[in-house]
Length: 157
Figure 1: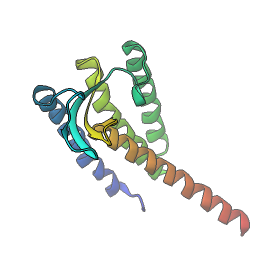
Figure 2 (figure 1 turned 135 degrees about the vertical axis):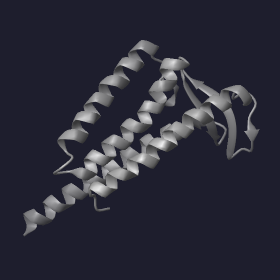
Figure 3 (figure 1 turned 90 degrees about the vertical axis):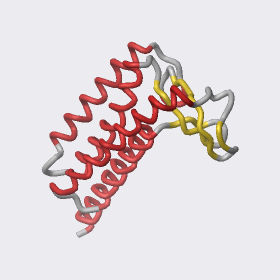
Figure 4 (figure 1 turned 120 degrees about the vertical axis):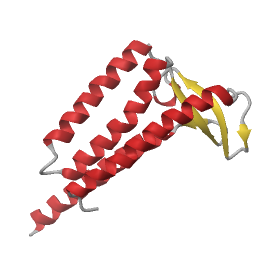
């Protein structure tokens, strides 16, 4: 994917997805059952899963998770700013990760946990903000790989 200033306009629909995710979480907390009783099948179901820790429900104190999230977000924002000209792909990917993380950080501050509502294979609980974070990480890895591949090609010539 070639990155230009126009590419950064794609952050707007991504931000709107994160906002929609917050609205879905609000409705899910009101209407969906806890993960003890799923709405759906074995492959995909809907239910509330309150993730009080970090990824994969690894338990940590809420204050630590919030502080760590803010620090990581600040580092990613600095990377995005520093790389905006020479590495716009890295900058874009970093901003995508930050947008997804803001959704989960909001949950932790407002509810005291991250609200997951999509249950996959009766065990993995995620939300749209998680999917946005994963998208950003994949874009970051692809851009890192592309840069490495270009350096190897230049070294061979």
